[in-house]
Image (cartoon, rainbow, N blue to C red):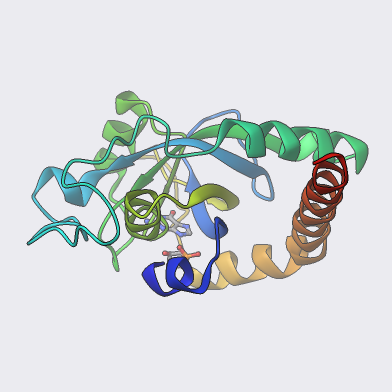
Length: 194
Ligand SMILES: O=P(O)(O)O[C@H]1O[C@H](CO)[C@@H](O)[C@H]1O
Ligand SMILES: Nc1nc2[nH]cnc2c(=O)[nH]1
């Protein structure tokens, strides 16, 4: 993220595969991140720990505005125009350290804490990006449903994650490229009026 910042990048798009905790979510849904829970951060694991590099940002950066409101609005509009409303969601992503998938008790706890999806990435990058003042937009593909029921015979597995990723890849590409095209056209129009 810091190299991007030094290269003059101002906005980053992040994507991940995640397990669905929200009982309304289905495998194949695409969730716009509106917020996150940084579980490793509760135990002091944060990429911003250690001496602050003032060239990039302040010691105590806010995170209540981590996921850009305007880009989320743009994503909802682009998804509606592409006919993706049926599988578009907006919710809270919780990061855990991995690499093991969650226990049933952990999934139940995360759901009660307000998380809609659980994964192992993205939040570290967002913390560093926001510290540097980059605008962030992130999407989770719900690749599997978190196992929440002691009667269930299902288990999370990486093959299902990869398979769901392959199934939605083209639509995710379409969503991101439509957003980027609209951002470019917006920027060009603004430059003309300046
Ligand atoms: O977060 P990404 O890398 O998209 O992938 C998620 O899916 C993988 C597990 O199947 C883990 O790598 C987890 O972090
Ligand atoms: N932690 C976690 N990461 C995932 N990545 C894809 N699915 C999952 C999941 O169920 N849990």
